[in-house]
Length: 419
Image 1 (cartoon, rainbow, N blue to C red):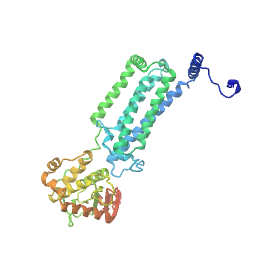
Image 2: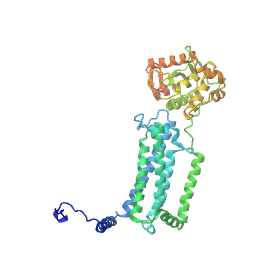
Image 3: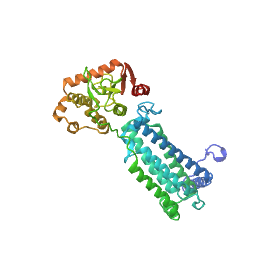
Image 4: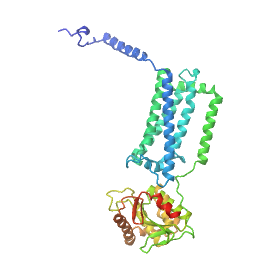
């Protein structure tokens, strides 16, 4: 029976042996010719696409930098992309991984996109012939992309939360990598190493312009390193003799004015970022407006080992920190301990009791014993039960004149008190 040939309209079985090998070579030749026949779009389309992506990345990085600043400095600030525990821009900003070499990662993003955009005009010069600078830009985009992968891994496995605008920045970076690769593929057939050497010679021919770019960025890096404000470090006002503090009739520590017109009870967790920020904000108000506010502290650690509200811990170990503060209160050192825990607990994986005791002025041995003392635990449970009864379900929560406010106190209440 004869197999049908191509004229039968069914299928074609190539002959075996040398003729079959020739057929395979012809297929490769046809494929290669087809690839060469792909006509690139006009160079301007590629150039302005890359430029638009870089500008979008710059704008996004500026927004992230502003958001990072507001998260740390505005007491009531919450970004609109704080959607859930898993998708929360504020959680990512609050992480110590949002700072790299003493500067916010988002600010590094601003510098990076500006650097990319500064070299892009060199690629549009007629003498570049659609080939020069693109290997350099591809290499820069590749380095950015690797860093993005590292940041994505940290978000996934360490922070366990994602920032929508960070993901957008990652997408822009990968798009830049692809586009710069595509331009090279369309207009240049040199290997990357050889193309980079040509880029170097091309830039050396424009020493004045290139020198201006490098000098500007060196100056930016120096200024950022020396003068960028470290606003993410919360510094509480010092306890002074003219800022009264004591213990309420039912045994809770207070600070401010004993007979103030505005009394605020805070339920807080020493590992809670928002508690930290709001607590220091209130402390500054106490210093700036003496006699106006009385702040009472109560513990509500989001730790399932001590808090029956939780099935698993939100802040593991915060219950132990609360016990340290309760014991310090018995030695008239509550506010010193509270300030120390707020300023250090979130930035360290483990606190050494001796270091804590020396910082606050307590005996390390007694401090260690207090963690297992029944009375200390009973005082902590009283605060937690009182909070649950009042309707506290998270931290920080504030009780003012019998009203419960979750997350923040309405500014009108504070403004009316300090007028």
